[in-house]
Image (cartoon, rainbow, N blue to C red; front, side, top):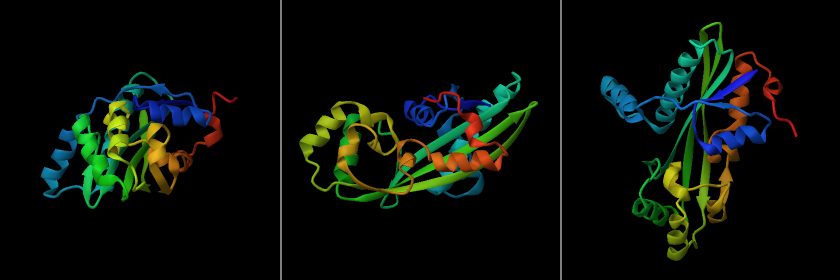
Length: 213
């Protein structure tokens, strides 16, 4: 069965490839800030992290799913979104080096939670059926990370475009002491969660394998 990843994230693509799935990639056309702001204004409240990431995962998957359905696509569309929470504050992608440095100065020696929203849509005969869930993983950072290490890490550019300003599967991994929860959640999406959602939609996970060793 064909699989489309509603994302251009290299990390999410890598995760799927590692478990035998070579996905089609489609960039969702979703104004994330506007989508969240509209819901918060209509409901008169600030969305908590788990609702925030789930909303965006749903919007991304549906945007791509609807476009593919119009093209006669038959398969699954996977959408995701992540954000990092520390002491009640929410952190997305820092984008700017100075902002990433300040994040790391606050995070070292602390434990935060990575929230990851998932939405899987079964597209068939022009119809869409969705299943969604949120996964969370607690991340503990080493307390002895030095200012020089932080500066060197930020200078690589790696933490600028990832939620929370860190990775666990690349250069940032050496600065992380512990992950509690599905480790793939921290990389970009929880593979165990995606598998469960795929099965909820009546599809066998192994039927998605298209790049076995």
